[in-house]
Length: 470
Ligand code: NAD
Image 1 (cartoon, protein in one colour):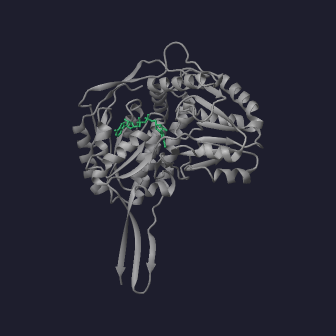
Image 2 (tube, protein in one colour):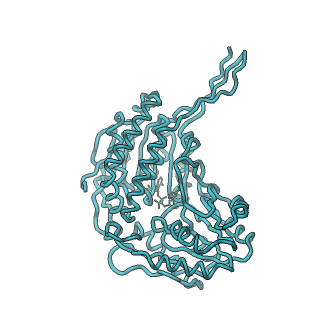
């Protein structure tokens, strides 16, 4: 694996003016690599380069951008093994899942390349022609979290470029290396300055959110950070897409087939060790199925092989960082102290690494922290209900609203319930599935704006009406 990483500013690989910081492997707590730490002056240089590049890139043709994105996808594909290994080492997920992440990055890049932004004809009469055009915004700042670092960087950067913007990206300090590599690959196909990357936690993120040269921020991360960004974005009225935290509820209806749904519930609750924004985070199960489903989930959890994601046979990796690991432990201990019955896991593994096994906690209800707060980790609270309307009310009694799900054999009834959930996506007999062509975003405190599909692409544009008097 490459050990030297660089920032990319105006097409040049540069060292961090503030030295380096260590990126840790969550499976071993050993240093993966030293990451360059940018200064605020380097951020300014990156923004300046992006502003200069925007003057030309905004006028590039549809074909030019499409071809560039497809060539970038080729490069990501060619570097897939290296990228997947970097992801496992700095993020912790098992290698097979890291390969899925790289595959997703390629698929999203290719899909975004093919999207077109239509000119809408509003009026075409004898006297008048009115057209609605969509123009790029300018410099887009991308700020990403540590859970799906490569995929989320691609979700931000590719539509920004496709729409004709230029980019300054800032990855999470926990998982910056894959994004530095990604932007290096992108720069092999784009003019200097179109896509830049800075890294470091020394105030770079907040400097981006109040930077006068950045016209839009696309942010994926926690709700409190999203709120901070929104406050400081006011000075130059930055456009914002905020993909924030969630506490997704799943409701299992009385007619569900436990045998058929248990694996799906487990996989979507524990996807990426539960560190997925739209993972199933609270499960409401009807009385009549409660014990059977709890037993099944516990059996699936106990069958996982927990370990270093690079080791053969491992299905479950570590939590990404110490803070998150401590939070999961705290929430499970609190649930246990409040009557929760731990059916699997419930204690960290001894030794090095932030290993916390998949944990199913039964007999907890609303009012307990594990149910009320986003755990963002490998612990699922399973709550009992007897009245469906009550379950819907409890699912909605929450400040955030990213996703939700209903599990049932009766699709009509399931859809009636799903439509009452206050969330951006409601799945039926599934959860956490994102697709390049289906708009995805949250409501309430989970943020606003969507990603993916044409609607997602339009978030990287501003409308301009051309009003022609003939
Ligand atoms: P975080 O908010 O701590 O950090 C996210 C990014 O913001 C990092 O790059 C960080 O350096 C940067 N940052 C920190 N302070 C900043 C500031 N003041 N101004 C600007 N940037 C700043 O989130 P995290 O812990 O990395 O990620 C976990 C959270 O992200 C969870 O709540 C999860 O639900 C959410 N998430 C949401 C989605 C979604 O699509 N809605 C996807 C993934 C994760």
